[in-house]
Length: 146
Image (cartoon, rainbow, N blue to C red; front, side, top):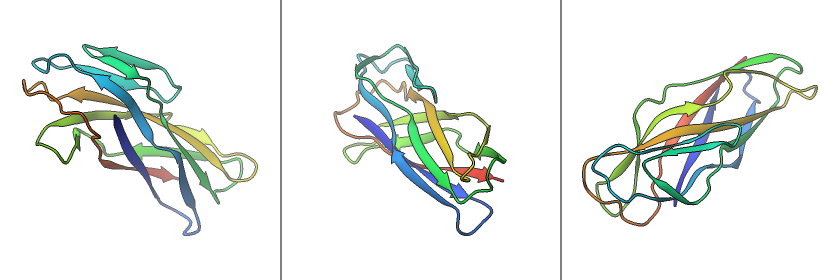
């Protein structure tokens, strides 16, 4: 099972709050061989695309709720994720988060709330070593500028 926690780093009002409703979940993956790169993309709209691996259980994007923003205003989402590693506690094997997948700008609702759906592209290490069963995780941050 491959889950990772997505945290929000918010700039602006000190009273702004982001709540993770659902963490990003790549599902349960089946990797037959790890001698060439395989990938899975979980898009912000819920689509899942795989290449070179199989899904035993389907994953889903992260869902965050941000509140205390200016009502009906445009906000911009960004990140600095590049080649982040998902690790486990059993061995030195890892997955690589290639990039996050989300809409880069959105409009808050009349209450100053924003629902963010964030997916990601994950790829295997392609180092020839097998993956052990277990959870692989990392913490990534996003910025919401307003």
